[in-house]
Image 1: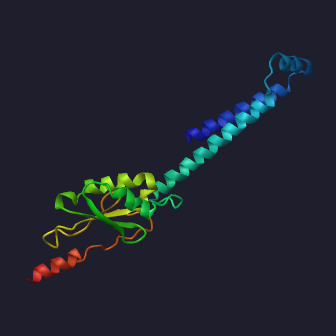
Image 2 (image 1 turned 90 degrees about the vertical axis):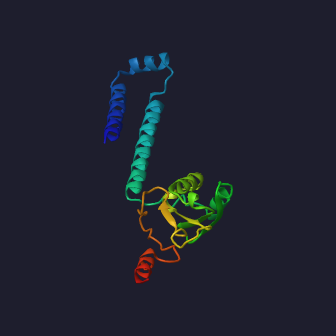
Image 3 (image 1 turned 45 degrees about the vertical axis):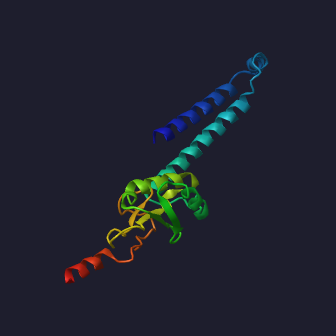
Length: 189
């Protein structure tokens, strides 16, 4: 709101300066133009263009902030799947990566110490230059697990916390055995 007010104030100053220059008598105006080779109309056009550019930038920034608040991924900057796999090939501890669908990336690690939120952070940082990672959910699984619980997938959206998902992004069941079903089976034993 403050920026918009500043833009309006700048536009008013430019308008008032232009009107003031138009009220100057012809002889004084001619002398001023000869003394200073500044093209007043061009200057006011440049200022008006600058004000318009600032206004457009402000509107665009507000739109981006609104999209982020709505958790809406930027569809103009999707993460390229093959570029993502290539970027993760050299990440320490990462074995294989594969895209389950357009939003869910499965990262296989060897060792329970690598199935952490820190690994998800590392994957997300590697993907960040490739596009808007708000549209990416990283699923990390330990392929060396000795129990079904150890093989459970740790899952998180790159830009959100916990089980939060971006708009239109459903929570996908990635585990081979649903944890609720596992609990029922254990209770029956």
